[in-house]
Length: 520
Image (cartoon, rainbow, N blue to C red; front, top):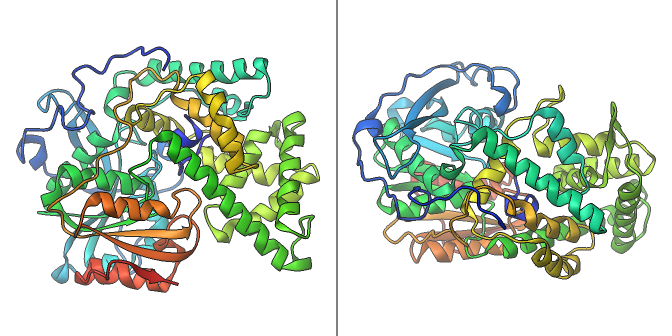
């Protein structure tokens, strides 16, 4: 099945039957608004201790390395209401991590990160990316967390590892009625497993509740304002927070920006075009390198025809992968998608395509596993389950088979490589046992402090046009747009000095760049 840790589930995971009603639940915009104020759970003290190794749901691994210059990462748990309509009712635990500021005398406060997904663990994500933010740690405690439904924060659980191996290997671009039946039954089986294993939490894991959690995190950290760095889906979460709590927004940066004006179909189609553009740019680079590029073809079209032909052959006959697992068409497409997030990965795309063409699918399968949250030992993190759960409770759309097939021609026109893959993904929430809440998120934030919104012209997953849409929706005087003319998903982590100077100047010294600034 198509999935992606960094894509919105409505693009590549996407009811005819609603099994659980959301009447009275709190993840529905302003209904069920938290009215408890900054009392009770909101004023709890956090017990920070040395961090353990990440849990299986967070992706496993070892405890985070010591910080540069000494010191250790610290972890804590905090309680938040499961249902904000009942703030004194049942609670759930959120897992947090922090690295304390290097210069406490000039400390501004805490800088809270969300790295996207939805479904990505901030407790594992922040240490892995910490070197990129070391300058910011001079004046901030760097903080991240596992949002509700993710990792250690009551992580959503669906199928077991063996079942997930089968689920992710299935054909996600059915060609006939029999394959369509297998595909839709697989989605239904997956959704039923999520309901069986995490049913009581599924109605409450959406973005609106996560935004309310963010404000509880702010309060527990002792900050008057939320200083925030959101990437990819983290920009949507930040936008919803700004809408709910505009007066609490401090210095905030949105990078790799989700377009808040697009519904799920429009977002999926936009990503289809975005990944096609990234593949075009990869193929163009390959052609320009001449004999250094080992792929067959002397033009962009010839290289892309090679990719299309390879995927068709894999659809008919998968090749050797890892152990007894084969590289299927779905895995290969996932692997290609993974490499298009950053220009640094293009070398692996070239090698992976060559290897697969020769009958060795190990590299593309490894890349697909990374996208799906599969660890080398065969265990899975819960990133795929959380991704589906969060997006399906956020997104109101429920496409049936007829509606999906009617939309496929537009997707195929947008991309001969990714069109079918993304188009069939519209079915991802079709059997989900919880109703979705809205067509688009409300991110209007009148009265908020300025929010720096960064768009990258070659971003495949959150196309560039979304940055201006986010800035406009945040409102005049709030959204400040900065353009990075480059490749990849996320500009600050891409290492561009111009972008980093602008972000650092705002976060560390409060200097807001001019709206419309361009970093070439």
